[in-house]
Image 1: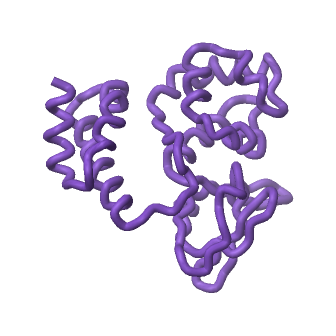
Image 2: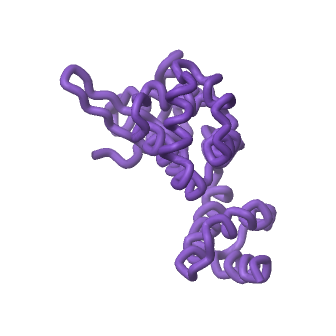
Image 3: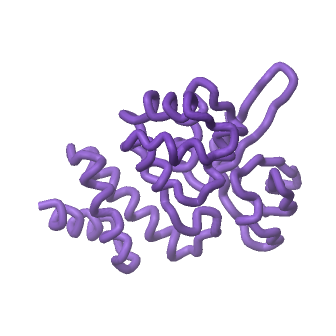
Length: 200
């Protein structure tokens, strides 16, 4: 099973992108291929889900683990297949999607292609209790990160995981995340110290 691929985007098509890793091109079905750009110098990391059927093996690509987890939750709903889930994720307002599910907003969900009232209601029913655990970034999901941004993300992510391990509820951690993101590049320890001050 693939977890992620790191390589160069060599092809961008309406339904998919191709990421070249060690001279092998992997075709990845993604929510919005045009957020990626062909770049023969800067590598990107794309998280992967492999779907296997009797007549097909497909790789679905995601900008980060949160987007992948949201996809996995969606395909567990009766009536939602991988391609339908990808269509839902093509809407960049993932936070709006999460809020709609949490608030039983069937009308919001029926605006997605192939989603009727029955399926929308099923999405709310199946995912309402699970969806609050997901945190999806709304901005620049597909933009390759610079070295400084990666350092910030790693340190911040470690700090957020540490807070969860300490017993803070994920809703509380999510609430302070945006405040922590405003801080300059720093260490996990500094993020954690600042986070505890915000929480207390």
